[in-house]
Length: 88
Image 1 (tube, rainbow, N blue to C red):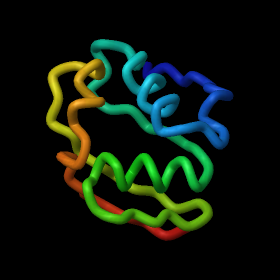
Image 2: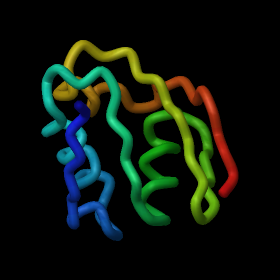
Image 3: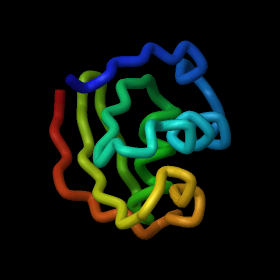
């Protein structure tokens, strides 16, 4: 069963904090879902996708990043593929 972790540091955090949270994801996790607030979540999505992503309230973005480990996420700047963008 997938683990659910509540991370209070996501609220209005910097990109560096956001990335440090992703880096700490479980090593065997093939996917991570992050629920957050703007502007942090749109900024992080833009950083990962390499193109502007503006998420509305209750919006969602699916970004695929080709990495071997969550510790590699920092080097993946702009290399993510925006697979889906859903309005709230």
